[in-house]
Length: 71
Image (cartoon, rainbow, N blue to C red; front, side, top):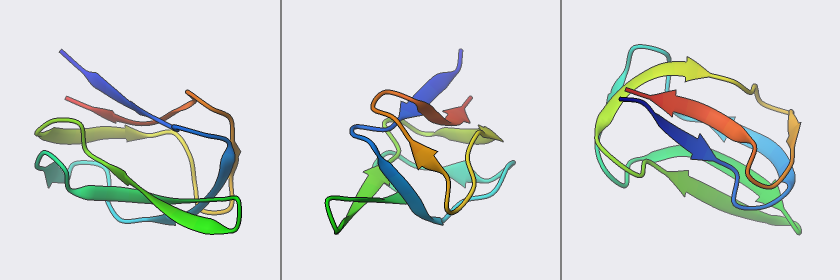
């Protein structure tokens, strides 16, 4: 079963800390989302392996947009 990691707010992807195939643990920092002139870390909602990264650094995203898929 896969888990989608979504954007909690609109903003720009500032930094991606993971790669496809990487194993992550609950609350590992995955992405930094820049919004409202602040850097907002996005954490893993569960343990898993990164199977897909749907954004790249500099991408503008909307609220609830899927950023990363974990399996």
